[in-house]
Image (cartoon, rainbow, N blue to C red; front, side, top):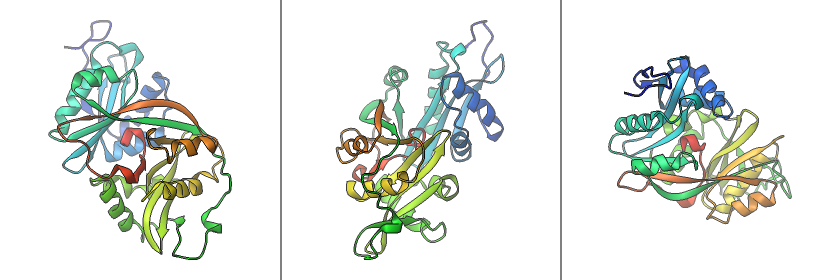
Length: 296
């Protein structure tokens, strides 16, 4: 039985709901994170969020499981309150989550602090995730308003919530390899802007920008190649006042070096890890940025 530092037992892990939003934000602040109210609200809506109540009030810990069909799930926002750290809560939450996930491949992005636990649980590193943040400086702002009218060339435009969703879901499923429709259908209302890439008049990619407290996150970015991804990101990031965040694979030179040239700085690198016998499905060459690392 797990207890706090005063010997008081923690209650069992429970599933959190919308009424726990305030406590989730407080838990994030306790660990020095931004409260990220909008992101927590989305996860409480589309994901399974598990938590342990603290004997002295609030949440002692929480973790998020997001399912993508019958073969894939992701883990995010694994947090334990500082005053309850080193009591075994992190392991208990992760073991509960993995039991709930069942026989699927589970992925996560690990910080240096969390990686030793995930190693012990059987996760393996499959690649790296690099976080770039800064004020985006386009060398030449070529937005949709100035894009060529020749439909044989690529251009981006704002997504039509009614007309483009089916194409977005088809493109994403082919690239991601699993069904993210329960998440992506919320992008038109969750995101500050959702854009599609047109190639010869047909939708061939998409990307979103959304506000996360003081930072604008660009993600997801799904595109046929690096040049298309850069066009989508530019048209989303160029109008933004304030910092922009991009999460990228540092091994793929088509975006990290470009991001630095346009004003973003590398601020952190984490490990993308997987649990289960199979690697994540999909076509990584078309996946340039996640919705967020909590929903990767």
